[in-house]
Length: 476
Image 1 (cartoon, rainbow, N blue to C red):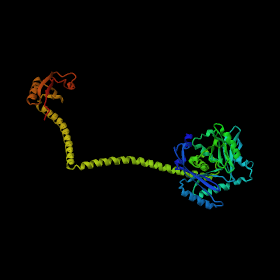
Image 2: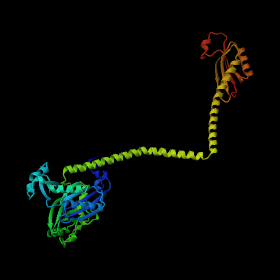
Image 3: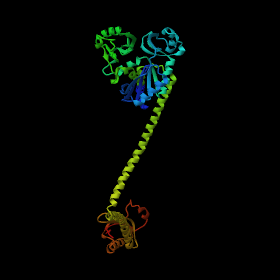
Image 4: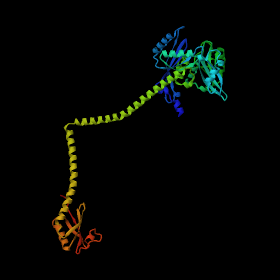
């Protein structure tokens, strides 16, 4: 989880897609506007391209204000869109050195402050200096550390300069060491195979950075003779020498074929430092050293997180609006389809109205038929009970009537009588009065033991129980 969070490209999510790398000295300015794309959740696998690159030579003795004006015009002419920049101090007061520090030291900043006089050959008070360091390698007892010193006045000059031209400075490197950052994204270069990186440092010298397994082990300044000796040793397989600038001055002659020239993002070699600084802005992990004061860096981080928060709020608001809009859009769509269908039917005129009236009439008839059917059953049963009661004479009383709603319409009557003649007469009356047909005496005799009324009439002498079966017509 921690690794995933470290790989998230917060700059991209905050809307920072362009970065300026600026190689700035008293004599010139070279700028590369680098644009980044790719997966915002893995910042180390991004894709870079140079959106703009330009350079300008300052006239000798130009004042600060004149340089600011020229650079502003240069940025406007090239339509620079980036608002964040990384620069480097290359003045004579900038010094870098590699030394050994005891591994037991817990605070390297304090150790440097205590030993800076021994490290520097120039007697400058610590109050006038800014320094930064990078641990190159670790051993059990010692750390190999590269320490860079610059004058605070140079840092303040750069901060003021970038503030005047309207850029947010997020890091300041020292010297030309950040030119080597281009190796990590150069086509066909594998860092594990790089033995040295040569950067043109002047008419008679070059800065050489030595690598072992992709890590810096040494940095030195060599003259043309020393460079030729090193180039001749490059015949061993696996030694890759990267040169960001061609040595047309003759610094390397007979062995120049052993050195590979790298063009940063397809640009001229002179833009190597500017391109490396722009990469440093996107990926500080490539070169963590900076002499920019903590307060300025904190302000830049606050601006970054504020932008990230604003974009997150806007994204969540847009998502919420979309979730609310989607069902509303569906409802509106289907309602419009229904309205269109109804409008099409209304255009049919009287025929549509007649059809609707017929449909309603059919519904009414169906309701009436269902109601009449239930009423029919109720009226037929009532009529039967009325007719049975009408023809039942005195001396006959009924205990139970069962009407079976079958095709024959059979009715079963259970009852009691004082004599058999009354029962026979009752059968005839049911037939003659057309209460039923096929009137039959199913049983006649003493009450059954399980008769629910037997216990009531058991003390009555001469009572005969009977069961009559007949058919009735249920039609009105």
